[in-house]
Image (cartoon, rainbow, N blue to C red; front, side, top):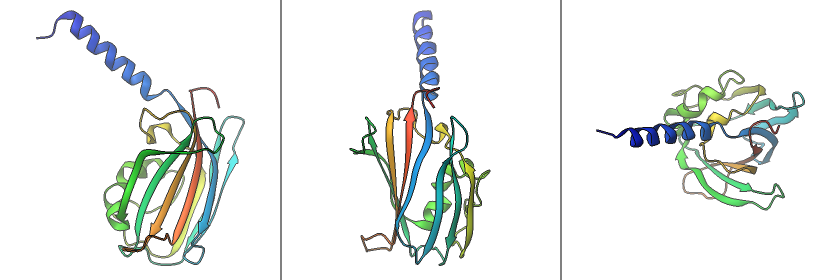
Length: 183
């Protein structure tokens, strides 16, 4: 049985943990496609929606069937001062066959995309060629772990073929992380 002091300490820890979970805001900064236009022509851009929010808008023209002959990996890096001097961060998704990703890991992220895009639902793989849209997507801080350091972040998304290390599609999404109310 817990003493009242221990119970009070536990409640304080839970309270601080819940405050910590909502201690930052995130906002899109920039989107770049570095290669792979022959497989997917991506026309996404970040734009200011209003004074305090930026959004991701545009479309992705997928030209090939995406199945387990592709693998996806996601790496993150951050620049604490926002000066593009990035440090690799251990937050990542290891190289995984794309259908395994869509059927498993995607279920954690899909709810943040479903209202602003027509990206495949969990389990919809292989993905046939089609046009996907992003309609004023706003980043949600709940999508990220609660311990994200403030600064400029770069998320690198690589689509590769099994056994080949050179990405066939390489994308980078930049976003800012700041204390609540800064943006």
